Length: 58
Image (cartoon, rainbow, N blue to C red; front, top):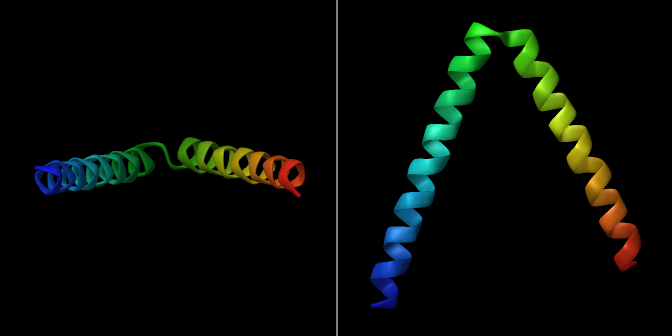
């Protein structure tokens, strides 16, 4: 039963990722500057949070 649950979970994750990627790609075609800005801001926030988390554990 656990194998079935894991398989369903993997399929759901794959579908969600595929849906998200298609959404980002289509939005990038419609509003490329906004998409670039938001992705850069998200990447910067991720780097900063990773740096802060790394300093707390070290």
